[in-house]
Length: 109
Length: 112
Image (cartoon, rainbow over all chains, first blue to last red):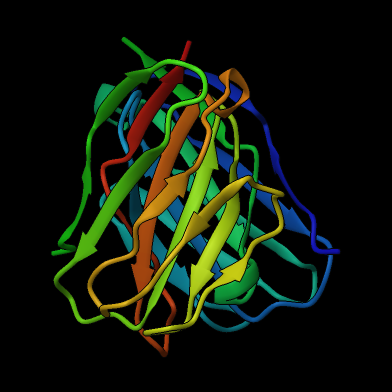
């Protein structure tokens, strides 16, 4: 059974600092998704990673995928308050997509 | 931009009531999904559909049922609501290819 683990689950960081969120998964998959969820809101798609070595960047966020290590990272550069949210990774085929528990990020001034 | 809608956004009902949560998308996506999410927790797939007249159960056991009579519409029904059904229900859709799922705004259900 596919299992997805994110760490850390809670992350409090200062503005302008850098940090990385990790997403490990247990079985082979060639696609991985990152989503953002604001409190009380729905999920917003951030990145779709479709192959080994894929790297995508949007603003202060950069996501990468290593299918051999079964690992994806979401790197935050020079954090700002607006990035405060919960970030989920998701892995698997469309009919059995498994989500990580989420990383609740708080960016403090 | 994703166009997927859910109604109602919030619902408070008593135990034993029958309810239907509506989900519609205007993107022509063939695949649609229902997820259940408790506050601050991960999502669990409860139903999905490949297309019209196709419905399947997800990994989370659920007492709900779904139907897919039209491509754009994927309602979820609870025949007899219980307090254990209190949760947020998220509808999503995707097309073939990247299978990127687009989520609706969610329905926050409270069963008293």
